[in-house]
Image 1 (cartoon, one colour):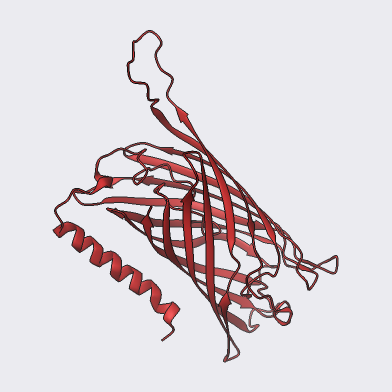
Image 2 (cartoon, one colour; image 1 turned 30 degrees about the horizontal axis):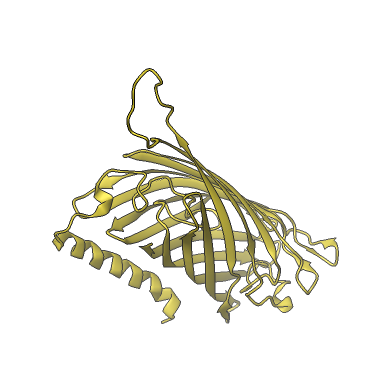
Amino acid sequence: MNVLQNFKYLILGIILFSVAKAEAHNPVNPCNKHEPFQVLCDLCGCSTSSGSFGFGTLSNANFVGVRYIYQNFESKNGIFENSPISKETFNTIQLWAQIPINDSFYVTTSLPYQDLTRDFNKVKENLNGLGDASVIGWYKHVFYKKKDESVVDFNPNKEPSGHSLQFGLGVKLPTGKFEQRLADNINPGFQVGTGSIDGVFSLGYNYGSDKFGVNTLLSYYLKGENKNDYQFGDQFSYAVNFFTAIPRQKMNIMPFVGLSGDVYDSITQYDETLRDTDGNIVNFSFGSELAIEKFIFGASYTLPVSQSLFGDNVQSKQRLSVYINFAL
């Protein structure tokens, strides 16, 4: 069986093993102190794991880790109800990290490895290789509670209000291979890479308390043109997640539900707009994050609520994401 297809089961097995180990371990878990603004246990996440997979996690820990993403699609090759269907499976293993610069600035980066399979008319085609890497710099602005001037307060430290804003600016690099022969597929996303340099602009708002949190993320991807004069359409992504904290003796559990979506502009080549290459999709997601000492485990499952992709010829079926991070 394919290694990437089994990777999700390996991660889930490690999660279950770690939970059992945590229950048998004596030291107190640092995420059990109900202090939502500590580095490891901050509920004000910088982004989400839905919509374009997100750049970080629910917990606001700086980390290095690995994430597995599974997606599948069905593409109809024709205008008739009985037109042949292409079934596509996307498996991605992604090295990712959130690296602190100081209290206000940090960097997120990712490097994916892609394994794509398409089954059309009983003929299978497989692509694999390094995908497109990305690097994004973030500025985080934390809002603090206003002190009562009528009360003498000898504590010099400001108390966070739970609200914060994040501003991101970054780039996606053409480290993945783009193949022109695949550009005529019904699903033009069946590529290891885009071959272009893209700009990424993001804005996030988050609120977190000891028990409840919400985070939102808006991102715009300004797509560049590759050496084949092929330019994927610009993309607008949005996501909102609602989550809560369930503290246990040796761990912290954060289940969440959310909505996310993407809006795609049309693809162009040789300055001509390609027909039926725009679209939009809205997704519903649910999942959970689990913090055990310095390890953060996460899983999410996503289903489309509504979609109209590439002239309604492409259907997204489902998405699964699981990850293991080590907090820095």
